[in-house]
Image 1 (tube, rainbow, N blue to C red):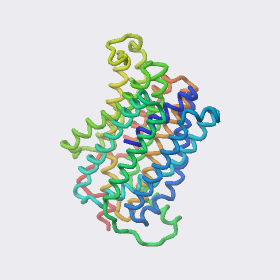
Image 2 (cartoon, rainbow, N blue to C red):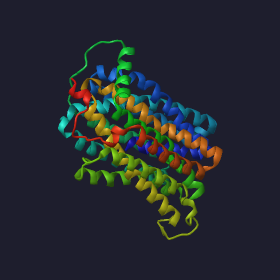
Image 3 (cartoon, rainbow, N blue to C red):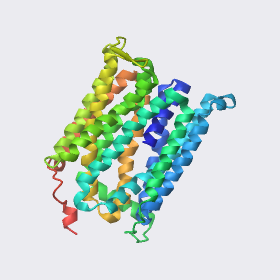
Length: 412
């Protein structure tokens, strides 16, 4: 919740300072550089360290980072340094956040694998994704309302408070045993993680499919442009649009918690990513559906047909994305050996988590080059192309059954 709220507030703040689409893309670039670079090493250290304390250290780092963003949003700061200088300092903070995420993602993944019995992985992955998506819904909504209510600085103060609550929760988890105590060279350790991922077709196909889909379907990065310049819905409308994918995800995950994806999950993964591409295309054109017409005004917020279509497409896109997240997460949990969870999750961070920021950068660059709407629609069609290529390139994904072990497990 806190990190989604922070991303919402900071991206809108940067757009208010610059009114530059490329500046939004640069936020993604400055986060993806450390997220990829540090992930080469983070998985190795996660496998060798105690997971609970690593989580505590990462969350403490996020609290300090939030304090830094609070300082950057201080109204009197603009009297001492220029807006471009503030934006550059924000990029530094985003860079640090990317490095922290390179550690917290594999640590969280490994910790969950140690706390949950293997037979409950599919259901646990669904509930874990549900809790994350609830934060993804509430965070942007709360962020948008807080910006409108009390400005950027106080909004970021509330982010730090929520992170402290998370820190207290993690402190209540007992220390966990260290399963991999072999002190092997870091280069060998990293290569083993990469080799495992690239030699396991199901994991590689699932990661590649999600990575390229998110890379080209990064419409969320351009939401400040849609909110201010295309739909003209302001901070509250922006908050609702940022929350829409999370709302769709929560709905889909709630259904999946009672209707697990046991039959043909690989085919369903392909359909889900294709649906994500279609909704991205329709969202791109939402401004054409009566953005000037007002259906209703609630507490000063004007609701237009274009806004409703944009919200619905983002919501459906989030629902399709939730299906892919559950299937991909279950594949990783089921087919990854316990001693390699940190390294495999670090590779997952490089593939998936980083693709969000690369997608933001791609969206910012293409929007600057070909226009906002064309950039979003182009990304949607590229997502559909990725699904087509994966369908033919990874036949084992189409035959996937999550109740069967992969050959690498039975061989051992």
